[in-house]
Length: 631
Figure 1 (cartoon, rainbow, N blue to C red):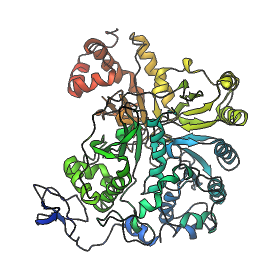
Figure 2 (tube, rainbow, N blue to C red):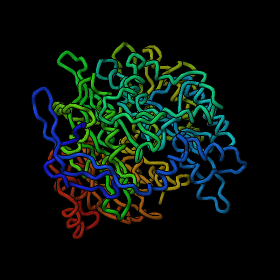
Figure 3 (cartoon, helix red, strand yellow):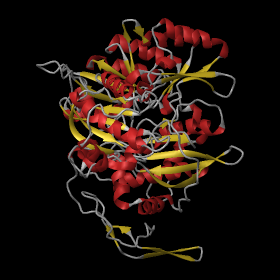
Figure 4 (spheres, rainbow, N blue to C red):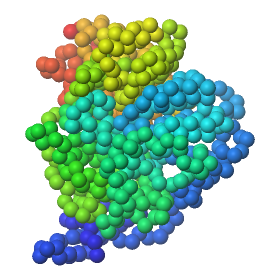
């Protein structure tokens, strides 16, 4: 019998709706003369009807039905069941909520771009497809990939097949699988940054769905004209052999199609991010798994520090849903990394909550078990102890905008894109500018975690030409971008997102203008505050990590969050609910006044709010006289 994990209290928990019960049956195993005491094993779960969404996955025959049939119909949209399966193929069905009457369905398509990488040929294709088959623009997401809006059902197959044939993919951009693997976007050339990029692609390949549904539906069963472009970069790792390798401890299933996921895939979406020591440009603590490259004294990669259990999504007025920053789990040597990652995913696959979807993310499993017991459960799949977390330098935040030397004689340039919207509008012609850069210099690019774009591998002699193209297309130089705007993020929200309760992307610029006016009025012009906004509590723009956040909680109202870290290592707290859009100044001015009067030397706004807490801020605001405090 394979031992599970040692627990002092076997009745520690029963996750609400969990399919597995834990018992205190004692098991002993002889290992090289030593005795291992194991005080918890899994009972066979009681047979019961599975949740509808879980049954739909099983009935889909590995993500084929009823999507395949629905795509053949003449209807503008597809059924609810087909829509759930379509998500795994990278698309969401949407309609413009501001147009009354019968819904005029369209589709949003999201790409899979490990490490955010976008070669020139891919941008040219997306630029053309968005013009010919979409609404004419592109949207850089907070998970380092492009998404395209406004695709009609009749064009969906052409768009997806074109993307597949050029060596890219939309597979796993949505759905209950490992999503796009994030990475620090800085294209520095050294062992640590190289490893972060390379292992982002390793993780993307290791956890890719193996069903043939994608080729079958979008390519009529043939193979893509070109394999996914990142596969060649990690061919040396023999990833398929690692995926199928079975250590006998349950990480690999007996499923004939999906060795990692089986026919029910994961309980919910699963997010992985990779960075280097000190670089938190990607919100590493918001991922289900975060890997931090650890090097030796000579700069050679030894392995990864591993954190688990981060996640943003929550539901208003439901205390059992919450945003959570990841816990430090331990260290894994390079040679064991893939097997440990399989063990963590298997732990979530087998023990995540499949009955209550709002509690299905791995963060709830980590929270309920506690990090020590979660680690022990992972070790039961892994087959060996997870080493302790290696001490590392503190994280810092940098968006990597502007000009930088990348370490091999070439340059990279970070271009700020407000709220990720790549468009041409009047004299502001960002979409055309990027196309001109790609066509002129064949430049490679990376989507950043802050919805911006980094162009890299630029020859130094081309620097002035790049600047000229941007200037000629009405793009502001970085020094003219307000720091508030540079730090800010907002999700798309209305009019297309079906979950949005109010505005985000379209109203965020005016909010930043109003906040800038307040800061100037109170002599706080030099303060740089990290501000984020979402139209609902699901957290796509990672608002709960921000120093100041606005989370839509009704028509024209927001929940205000305070106290996130300026280096994105902790969540903030909810300060005020139902703030009307017109009450921004009356809400924020007293908090800024208290910040002026009580801040410590060099203290950031988010750190101040975290230190004093919501009760002290609320007490201060009761007696505050508007206009009475300036720095």
